[in-house]
Length: 110
Image (cartoon, one colour):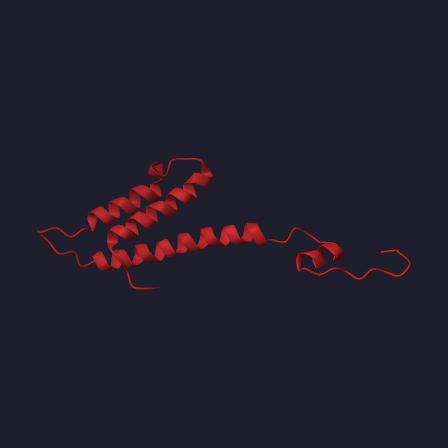
């Protein structure tokens, strides 16, 4: 994983991925328990002038890891839907997919 960006950027990206995931389910992402937990955790671990939160970097790393997981699952699903096999294909169709043509049989049978 690359270097961690700002925690605010990570939070926004994480909420965007939640929005993508809940958009498929048909419910508002702000009503999900995942949204409530993530926002609550970020609020509880923010740095204030009164205290220094040692767990902030740990929370940021976990959030970035979870963001990577959500993004990877979404991209995997998109790739799977696009390239998943459609069943057995005829030799002519397979040849057409890769840009070839099958040779014609003598006598006009093919």
